[in-house]
Structures are given as C-alpha cells and as structure tokens.
Length: 331
Ligand code: NAP
Ligand code: GDP
Image (cartoon, rainbow, N blue to C red; front, side):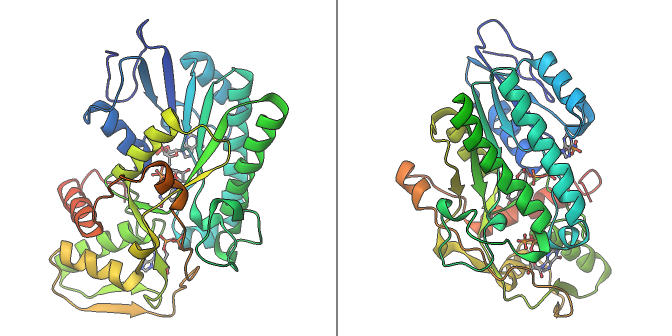
C-alpha cells in the first residue's frame, strides 16, 4: 500500500498510477483526500498528490510545468479554479474568466506534453445556458449564453469542454469533465461575501445565534438549487477517474426531485444550527439564476444504485463541522 501523508503522497514502485489533484486544499479536494486517506478508498497501485496554490500558481505556465516535472502524474483530477458564490461572481467576471482560462490551459496543455493518461476536469451546472428547457443535460452546454451574473466563470469553464474535444480529436487524449451542481461540505469557503449560499447561511446563522440577531437570507428565497454533499461528490469523482471512459462530460447531481428552494435550504440550516431567532429575506439583493435543474439520467444509467447522503443529514454534518472548526475554517 502506498503511504499516504496529509498533504501529498510519494509514490512507491508498486504505485503505477500517480494521481495529481489540483485544488487539493479546497472543498472538493479535501473530500477526495478524506476518502482516499481515511475512507479506505485508496488502492495499492495509486499514489495521491494533493496540491494547494501554495505549491505553485497554476495561472503561471512555468510553475505548472515545474509541478509536473516534480510529480510526474499519470492521472489528474483538475479542481483548481477561482471559485465563488453569486456575489463574488457579479463583482469579478473578468478575473474569473482570465484566471480560469489560464489555469485550465496550463493544466490541459502540460498534461498533453507530459503524456498524462487521463484528466478529469470540473465544470459546473451554473455554466449552462440561462434560457433553456429543463432538465438540462450534458448535450446543452454550448446552446446559448450563460446567466449574466457569472459569464466570466461560465465561458472559461465551457472552454474546458472545447479543449477536451480538441485534444481528443487532434491527439487522442482522454481528457474529460465532470459537471457537479452546487457543492457544500466541510472545508468550504464560509466567507459571507465571497462564498456560496449554504456556507454563507451557516456562517450567518452561527453569528446570528451568538449575537441574538435575525438571520438574513439574500434575495427572495425563491430560486431553486440541487445541492450535492462534497463527500458524495468525492465518491463519484473516484468512479469517473477509474471507470468513466467518455470524453463527453457527465453531470454529477442528485435527482430533479431533490431540488430545493433557497428558503428550504435556509430552513435546513436553521434546523441544523438550532437557530430559534427570526428569518429575514432581503429582496434588494440579487436572486441570480432562478434555476438550473439538471438531469442525472446519464449518471443513474451508469450507477443505478448510487446512494446520496440525505440533504438534512449532510447539512447537519456540515454545520457541526463548521461549529467544531470555527477558528480554523476558511471565512
Ligand atoms: P475551493 O474550495 O475554492 O478550492 C479551490 C482550489 O483551487 C483550492 O485548492 C485553491 O488553492 C486552488 N486554486 C485556486 N487558484 C489557484 C491557482 N492560481 N493556482 C493553484 N491552485 C489554485 O473550490 P471548490 O468548491 O473545491 O471547487 C473545486 C472545483 O469544483 C472547481 O473547479 C469549481 O469550479 C468546481 N465546482 C464547485 C462548485 C461549488 O459549489 N463549490 C460547484 C460546481 C463546480 P488554495 O486554497 O491553496 O489557494
Ligand atoms: P449560484 O448557485 O451559482 O447562484 O451561487 P450561490 O451558491 O451563491 O447561490 C446564490 C443564491 O442563493 C441566490 O438566489 C442568492 O440570492 C441566494 N442566497 C441567499 N443567501 C445567500 C448568502 O448568504 N450567500 C450567497 N452566496 N447566496 C445567498
């Protein structure tokens, strides 16, 4: 068995696969790390390497190449990205576009140059056209403009799909992409201004409970989202890396019937945090995209028995993690 350390893993001769996880210090990366280090999901022929931006800036081609020279990956899960919730996206569309285009081009082209056998990159259901029919499926990525709030992030992510197809067409590379819905869990970014809705609400509920103030939900609470727990997503990423052979992307999502309103999501946080104060809705704040209901039919076809963690339980586990790790959590 390869020896697994907290940050990255050095390969032993028996580890024929060297799996580099970019963005390994983030929400999704930490969940994959937990699964392979503590969850018994690592395999004896795999060495896992989890990178943070402290190991190298992937917007820089030279630093990216140096990381490949050091770690010599055979496989990559590419998670690193400039990431943020609705309100960070609205403010920094240009930065989202530029940073993510550079990161993605550096990773994919260096992977090609180093003969990496497989790259699984990460898209998002928020990159799909805003005006569309529902449910959204994998064939619809490029069918029209994304929601205006996050067009920089969305177009940069869409280009991963373009590049995956082009590397396959020109060089036969097996580069693919997973498309998760809204992710949440331990190690999320709980910064109230910059983060996504669930970590933002958990942090706000924590403070409201402590200070005896109301909990303010931004927007009307009417938009709808499908949330996926990071530890469920991590299990699916391992399957995509090991078993999924298509270049075409695959949506990783709970079912359409599991979509909830922002109000319902806030009520789950209220329950999990035992918050007994008032719930306010600030309708002067943006609602963003109303919904992006995605089909998980393709996933279900491959994995009909996959069990997702029930939403209330996953919210409770995340709230408990945040309260227990308040001092060190990203906020
Ligand atoms: P996250 O918690 O914000 O983590 C982002 C990761 O990217 C961190 O490890 C960060 O490193 C790294 N990173 C950022 N800029 C970098 C740079 N210039 N060079 C090297 N590393 C860099 O994000 P996440 O939520 O885990 O997201 C993972 C992937 O899932 C992303 O591709 C995201 O677009 C996608 N996704 C996320 C969601 C969601 O709801 N969170 C939904 C759909 C898709 P440091 O922390 O060390 O700086
Ligand atoms: P999105 O799913 O890509 O739009 O991004 P978010 O995870 O940031 O979710 C945005 C939705 O949640 C919008 O409808 C917001 O109005 C609503 N929302 C309610 N409260 C908050 C909050 O505290 N933070 C964030 N980011 N969104 C909130």
